[in-house]
Length: 195
Image (cartoon, rainbow, N blue to C red; front, top):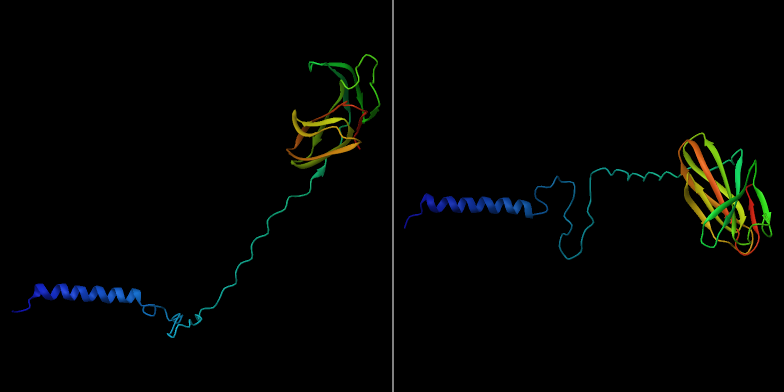
C-alpha cells in the first residue's frame, strides 16, 4: 500500500492547524516579551513583571457644585387682600390695600363681618430678576401658609403651635416673577412677616 497525495494533504493541514492552535493556547508564545508567565510550576504563582512604563491613573473630575441661591428681594409694593372663606370653600375679597411691606398680627378677625378661622391674607407682588438662577425666599407666619411663584405652588406649611419660617429655594429665569403668599387663619392668631 502506497501513501498518496490524498492522504498527505489532510495530515499536513492538521499539523498546521495544531501549530496555530498551540500558538494561541501557549501563554508564552506570541507575547511581546513584556511579561513573564503567571506560574512557573510548583503551584506558587509569580507576580507578573512588566517592562512597560506605567501611566498615572487620571483623577476624577470634581462634580460641579451649584452656586448658592440668591436671596430674592421683596417686591416694591404688595397688593394685600383680606379674603373670607365660606364653609363650602368659596372665597370673597373683603378688603384690598397696597403696602410697601408685610407685617401683620391678628389675634381675631381684622373686620367685624368676617368669621374667625374662616379667612386668609393673600399678598401679591412682582419682582424683576436680573438673571436666571436659583433664588431663596422666606417669610414668617402663624397659620397655614402657601407660597406661589408665577401661579404655581412651590411651598406649603401647615399651621404650627407658634410662629414658623417658611423658606424655599427655586429656579427661575431672568425677567418678571409673580409672587403670592397666602396665610390662612387656623385655630389661633394669624401672623405674617416678610423680613
